[in-house]
Image 1 (cartoon, rainbow, N blue to C red):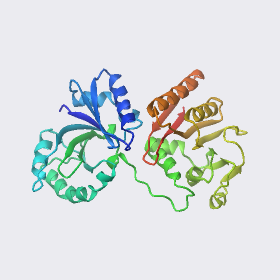
Image 2: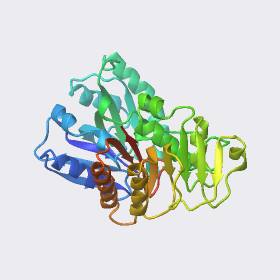
Image 3: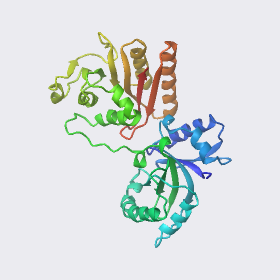
Image 4: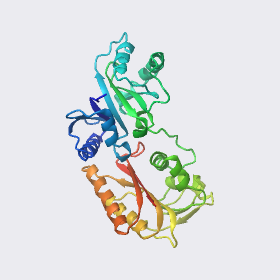
Length: 353
């Protein structure tokens, strides 16, 4: 199969950043192409010229390196005129031409108000169409491929596939989380999503252990501290504001009234987390100082992005951190992602080896 294009989901309003990202990744492997994207549509199409073989495209371009893209798909066909009376037959015919079987199928829409209106249609259509796939022996739990039907309307659909190990496992690339009733702010979901999205199961077990120590810079009222306490860590909460009373009663939090940019711990801690509202390069320099100074082993932090040149700013911050750690011969892993619960920001996790 040779894909028509690559399809990338993103947060509406971040099409430009997603386009810049896929262009940089493809150009690094001498894959030339062009972008089709509409502002606030929630998705971007990358069209290689000339077309690239599926296996080669999938081998070269890695979803894990993407920051702004929520999902990474290969489009086999775009249908704009599905007949209302029988959508199943033409879809099955197009899918059978791929000569692949699929582990499962996602019925998806853009993450927009228009897309949400299609959710009831997708729910009604999913059961009969999945049954039709099974009857054609197109569902195979051992397959490495997932089928995606990305509906723009009830008659317009991108027939796409993803390689399970090179894509998001979530429908629409969105990890749905429930807000914990005892958490003091909704910002807690950002750190929970970061841990569950950017760290695999082994990394979560290795790096989020009971009894670890942490510092939360700009902690008030405690949304990020709550996540650490919930994982049985001991936390120093640094802020001049008041922390949530119930959180303080846990006995795992020490409240310190101090400036997050000036505070340093008396002895090294395992984790530094930071969700302070400040220019991204200021946060980047602060995190780098903690890591190179031996004040922490791991860090999770947000970079609040400017209105313009958001992609360039993220790349500048990433490059600064890399140069600083490399100058101290520190081995590390860095993960950066524009999460579903992020808005005008990206979340970063750095693990020192």
